[in-house]
Length: 495
Ligand SMILES: Cc1cc2nc3c(=O)[nH]c(=O)nc-3n(C[C@H](O)[C@H](O)[C@H](O)COP(=O)(O)OP(=O)(O)OC[C@H]3O[C@@H](n4cnc5c(N)ncnc54)[C@H](O)[C@@H]3O)c2cc1C
Image (cartoon, rainbow, N blue to C red; front, side, top):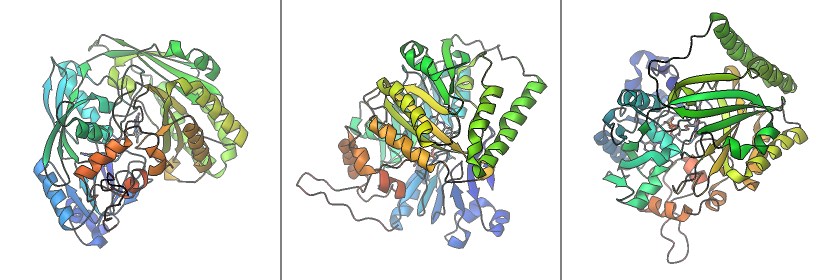
């Protein structure tokens, strides 16, 4: 069954395999302890799923405390699910799962200071709509806004603009329930270390219930998009990065690039982009989505066709320059077409040219047949311990492999692996929300404040309640204090 979010995309896919369950209602079956009726939960793209032993729903912090209490009493691990948008197993749990989509309110808006108090499960799109009449906006957004705010910050979700940090850097205060059920209020001034760990905490430090964000005066974006060559962009990158927001997509096999340059302007509420003609709409929808997806489906059997398909797509849709002006969120977000595997890494911005040239050569030399585009974005460095942009301005490079009509193949795996090796050589750090190979031992070398993060984790979750197989892999076990010598893994809880 699919619950549809009011902005069109399914909020969360809850696959009920038992037909009786459908007619009896999801809620009832979700609370069932009988595994025969336990619903299967999938992430949005459907690559990862789990059948939790117990699903809890919380619409306030007392219900969060109760869920944690019950999980503890059952000796069970618990993960929190936001909007399920992560293309990885980060939020999956075969034990207890806490769904927080009932905690979705925008509680208070202070237009003068830009401070906005929201519940953890509020979607970015709903926050945007709520603050717009007060003349406020997010300074940056990623490609979509369907994520919950807590989920977005837990993985340092980012947009683009070398002068703007990731979404975690907008958080000023956090209210959180610890695994023990204690309520904590955190900020840079109060429990600064815990605050720093939670700002990008992968859901392992506590369950966030409320956040105060610092937003900015609303703005429009004037966007110019145009075709270019990779070499032109790379040779003029410092100039390009002077735009308020800049990104480009490298288009493999066509060996072209598509640039997106955005300048902030005063908001003009009355102005809307001219309506598209029916012919243009049909062309974009029919050819750009449905026919394209059918072509990709065909390519999943015959990957050798991909270079031709990529060139067709570029020739048809990415040739004529475009100018547009609209409200910032509508310009930041775009149609991501269909479900996809994604792998994205952050490297020091100085290594952008080396990385892109390396990737282009890799695809050619290894004969990979790959989907377009390769997305390239820029994010300001920050001081958030586990943020991939910690301590350095970063270039994020993302590769994708579509899942046309839900057809999953392993065609992309060698390409993703080679991409990861290249990013690793360039001092890269993977995006936490996306599926990546390296484990905790490797990752610990990439984050200067790794040990500080682990210390907070040990302090607040010594029994490893907020864990799953993803955190076991990428963060390792919660360990006891190592100050007296050997590191002792804590008792691992039953899987
Ligand atoms: C089409 C698409 C486009 C995307 N575009 C971008 C992009 O432009 N930039 C980018 O950086 N990322 C992007 N992403 C990735 C996305 O932003 C992240 O996966 C984000 O974490 C998803 O938020 P969510 O609410 O769905 O969280 P989930 O995927 O449900 O969970 C993510 C993490 O948050 C934790 N969590 C959730 N709620 C809480 C809570 N209350 N307390 C503690 N922990 C919590 C979970 O336990 C988990 O660890 C995109 C994903 C998709 C599918």
